[in-house]
Image (cartoon, rainbow, N blue to C red):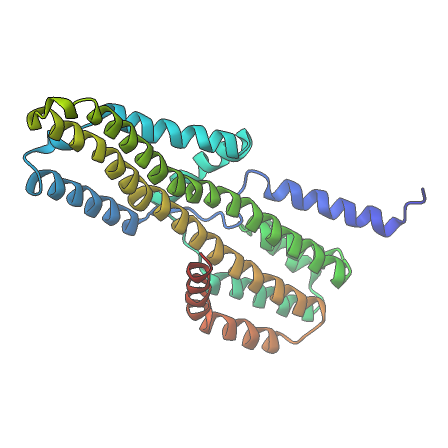
Length: 297
């Protein structure tokens, strides 16, 4: 089989893209504490405290260890049956991301692209190479390196699109695990309720309400556990991860557009206007994307 030189060059660039992305964030600036997550946790704990303190005789009314084991154990069993161990490990790693706020600044990325476009317009390749060494964004770094190496525009776009698709697929798989857990938890909560009702039926002949009613309460707590875990933990985590992915993908799309303009030889002023137009619509596009994802569900 004959291998073209251009194919070897593309393969080299592809391997470079693999090395840059594996085990790295596309936007590697340091994250900070996500205060919305912290506020949500506080409100969730407050809700549970209110439920246990003011809507029942005491917090002991909501304690049902067998039911909790059924819900959590059943949910985990279903997840291990549904996904590979690698996907589950990645989901566990992504769990910490909901507590961190990743500072995504499209304006900073745009400024770097505009600066490089001015250098490229002046044929200052050495200046671009110096800029590449100081860039923390692996995706942007790869893009500029491809330009400096005079890679064909179609090959640049193919590689950058591949990076976006790979990121989206990877992080979608992580979020889908938590969506699945949100679906499984209420189902196993109902299973625990059925198990409790079966146990309760054994005491009906005694007609002793002091025995029947506590058994009924224990049966219903498993549904309570399933609903709480699904709607106060698993589903919010999945939404948070999906929103993070959409933000990253949109900025990567802006980078790809800016790099394409540079490779086409467009003037720095045109690049500036195009990227700033993108940033002006950045928030609106994110809102539209999120509403669409909620509608699809």
